[in-house]
Amino acid sequence: MKSWIQIIVFALLVALAGCKGCDQEVKPIKPDPCKGKSKVNTFFKVRPGDRGFRPPHKWCELVPCDTFNSSSVLFEVPDGNPNSTYEWNIGNETEPRTGKKFEIDFSDYLNNGKWETFLPVSLTTRTPYNSCLDNAGDTLITVARSLFFTEKWITLMGNNTDFVEYKGYLTDKPSTEINLKFIRKKVGSFRGENSPLFLLVGLPDIDTLMYPKIACGNEFCYNYKHQTYRYPNIIHCPSSPLTNFMVSNESIFIQGNRRLKATFTFSRP
Image 1 (cartoon, rainbow, N blue to C red):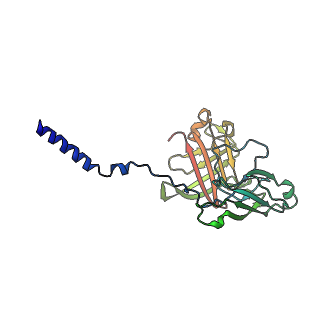
Image 2: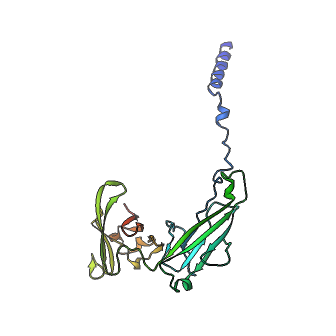
Image 3: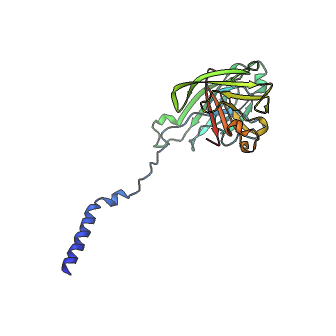
């Protein structure tokens, strides 16, 4: 009996020795109370206004753009400053605005010969001092940007053009150059589908891809250089096989209309 006791005690001692510092490893890490609070975010948001219509869909995330081809602009304060207050100075308005989100219709201003011009906008952010700030001077920051209003659009092709070709690469094959041809077909048909049609030729695995027709239903949002479309009912559309069951597509114009990032999403491989 004595020998068994000695063996058990020895085993316990080995187990305890092997767990040296275990209580330190399981202690929870204390969250940093200053995480995300060391700097004040000053990048205010602007996008085309809703003009009384339904706001864009929640999935609509557009790249920032300060060029507008619409007369209405929605202004919104930067994200992530819960204790800050704001003061806007927009164009030649005599009184500053203090709202966190509001829309302005510039129709009268623009129709008075102001298209193709810049509109200065500044935002002053006041933040109570706290020990998390890297710079004590960040309690008062003013940033200025200029919005540009134009009646022009960036498009794949103009009203009098029905064909445009881009050369580039697929993101998963950056060393292989391909040519993509975007075709607007105003007359005739394609595999039983009547015009008007929009076709894409040149993808490696698809001979000719047809964009979903308007009749199939779509949701969209856009700004001057970013356009995105979704087709939630594509599975029920008779022409869905010709679209490869495309559920969304987006175009981002990176440098005028000379550089394009096109993204397509399909419900099937």
